[in-house]
Length: 602
Picture 1 (cartoon, rainbow, N blue to C red):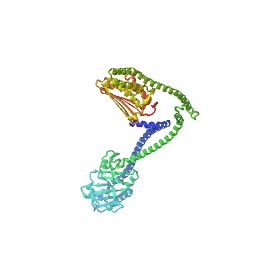
Picture 2: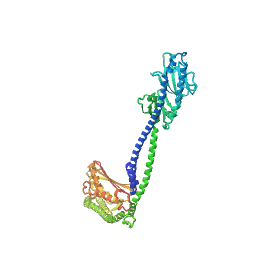
Picture 3: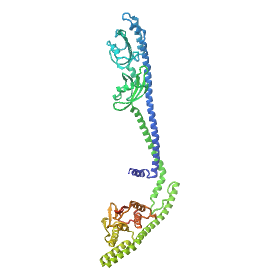
Picture 4: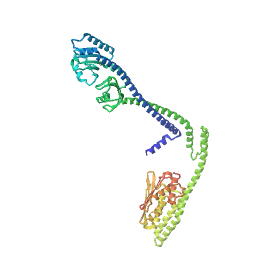
C-alpha cells in the first residue's frame, strides 16, 4: 500500500512533466553525490578534528609536564644537595654546646640563597633538628611555633632515601595555613637528638599560573595527580571533578603516558590524557568530558549540513531554470497536442519552436490523419463484430430452441393443456421480439429482465420440476441501460452445464442490484461446479485478447458477453466467476449505472 502511494506521489509530483523529470533527475544526482561527498568529508573531517583535538591535548599535557618536571627536578636537586651538605650533618651530629656558631651562619646563608634563587616556586624553606632545638627558616610568613615535628616521622615512612612529596595541603610551617605543595627529607636516627627535617614548601599559585595558561575547554582542566590527592586550579562543576576511585586508577596506570577513559557519577563519558613527571612519578593530566570534542564535531556537522542545503537550493534554482529552458518547446508542443480532438486533428502551423520540434509537429499531424482513418475503420469493425456475435448466438440458439419449444407446445396441445400451450407461445413470442429489439444493441434492464423471464418460463415448462429459479431485481435500475443478451447466455450455461447435470433438483438465483453508482448482476446455480484448475483456465481465456483462437474452455456465449462488455464499458466493468465442485457456480457482472446511451462508454 505504501509503495503504491509512493509511486502515485512520484508520478504526480516528480515525473508529471518533462521539466519536473529533468529537475528530479539532476537534483537527485546532486543530492546523492553531494550527500556521499559531504558524508565522506564529514567523516574524514570529524576524524581529523578528533585526532587534532586529542593531539593538541597530548601536546599541552606533554609541554606542561616537561616544564613542571624541569622545575621540580631543580628544586629536588637543591633539597638533595642541602640534605647532603656537611654543615647540616655537622649540626646534626654534634652536641648543642659544642656546635660552631659559624655553622649556623653558613647554613642560613645557604637556604637564603636557595630561597631567593627559586623564589618563583619555593614559598618557604624550613630545617628542624631535634624537634626545634635547632631550626632554620626562610619565607615571607611568620613561622609556626607549634610545628608538628613528630607527625612527619610517624606518617611518612617507606622511602629508602627518606625523600617524600606531598600534594596540596595547608602549610604547617607558618601561622597562616594557606595551601602549599611540599617536598622534604627526613634524617632518621635511633637517637631522637640526631633526627631532622629539611622541608621545601612550594607555591600553589605557581602551578595555578602554569595550568591556567592552557585552554582545555569550558569543563576541562589540568590537574596534578599523586597518591595522596590532586591539585586542581580551575573551578568546574562537581560532576567533572575526579573522584577517589578514578584518582586511584590513574595512579595505578603502568604506562608513562596515555589516555584513560571513564564515566562520572552521572554516566557521562570523560577522558584523561596524562603524562608522568619523572622526579616524583606524579601525573599531569588533562581531564575533559568527551562531549566537549563531540561539540566541535557537531558544530562542523551543522556547518557542513548548512552548506550542503545552500548548495542544494542553489542547484535546484539553476536546474529549474535550465529545465524550463529545455522543456519549454516540448511543453508548448504538449499543450498544442492537448487541443487536438476528434474535430481538430491538426496542430497549429507557424509556432515559434526549434527546428527539431517543427519536425515533430509535422510528423504528429501526419500520424493524426492516419489515426483518424483508423479510428473510423475500427468503429465500423467493432460495431459489425458485435452485431455478428449477437447474430451467431441467435443463430446457434434459435433453431434448437425453437424446435424444442414448439415440440413442447405440441405436447401440451396433445395433452389438452391448451391454456399452458397458449402461455408458452406468448412467452416464445416475447422472447423473439426482445431478441430482435428492432436491431438495437442497447436495451433497458427492464427489457432484458422480460427477455430472461420468457426464457426461464419456457425452460421451466420444458423441464418441469427438474429446476426452479428466483428473480430478484432492484426496481431502481429497471430504466438503466444494458447490452442485449447479457444475462440469457449466462442462464443458459447455468441450465445446461450446471443444474441439468445435477441429480438433485436444480436451482438458479438471478439478482440485479444497485450498488453505489454500479449495477451488479448475479447468476448463481447449485450445479456440479468446477475444479480450481478448470476455473483458472476459464478466467485466463476470459482475460485473453479477443483474437486468441486457443480458447477451448469457454463457449461463444460467455466469450461474447465478456467481449461485448469490454467493448462498451472498457475497464469500468467486471466479470467474475466463483465455483466449487459439487456446490455450484456463481457469475457476477458489474457495470456502470447508465441511464442514457452507452455506446463507446469504455
